Image (tube, rainbow, N blue to C red; front, side):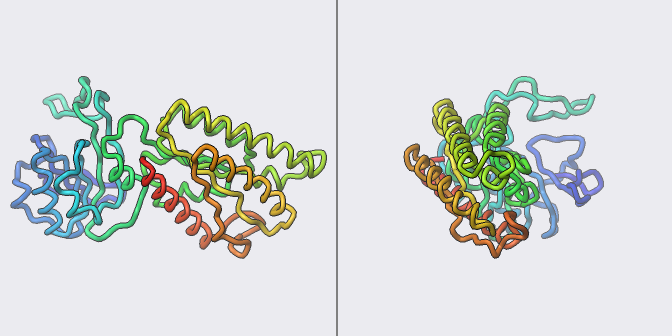
Amino acid sequence: MALDSNSMKDEKGNILKHFTPFQSPLSSGINVFTQEINKQENCYIFPSFNLVLPVMTFLKENSCSYTIVIRAENTTPLWLPNFVNFISDAFVLGIKGQKDVLKYPTKKGYVSDRYGLQWNLWAVRVQNFISGSSYGKMLFLNNPTITSNFHFLCVGDSMIRFFLSDKKFRNPMVHVYSEGGGLIRNVQYNIQKMVDRYPPQTIFVHAGVNNLSKCYLYLNEFHQLSVAHHELESLILLLENICKQFTHVKVIMSSIIITKDDYINIRSESLNATMKQSCIEHQWLFMDNVNTNSSHLRDNVHLNEDDQRILTNNVYSMLKCVSHVGI
């Protein structure tokens, strides 16, 4: 266990105690079970796998919050029933065979592992209080033996830009790409770019309102709606091809949210109907956003803080549905 004098620190400058199965330059050689730990301690733990349960039990008795590194198991871990409500988040630390994930202490300093991991490793965040849902937690509970395709891609226009600062989306496995003023074709391009970089588990798409609001780009409103439908069909074809390439991928399509402009809303109904029908045909999930309204907009189309919370909750409700159909 690390002494306070040589412990690492988190982003806020607080002491980040750690416990590892081997001695390191930062460890003091003190038995973790005999060391005093304050309730506010933020511990980083990588115990021997047969010590996971006793170490977690010890830290729970001391009301500590911590991050623990564990290997993916084919069966439910023995400790999970007692700690599941206290897990706040999780992410895949590395997959079997991946190199340079771990570093080992030597006389010359830390040396990267060049042989590759022997297991899939998770980093699980456990709080000293009951925690709600998060993407990492749901993925860990429903698919703990995950391999390489574990990313959650959120791609859309400026309506989802607030995801970038929302704590529910702060996870190494969650990737948000928001393009201000982006048309459906821009979102389609961004999805392809994201998929090439981050093999997805789930794709969330929100787009369309800019196609219906920027009248100056089109000859008339009929041309505008026709182009919007054409771009939507092209986007759906891309998602269909991605699902063929990655057969496990789940798609969530988010409806265009009602605005303060009745003309936009009328055209939105047509696009939303096409989205919904495509989701039914491809067995994707359609997020209708019926619990939002124009009174929650801070301008003509963008959400205020109240509706941002509603949209976030809608997304996580969809993720719960995804987990039930086999994340």
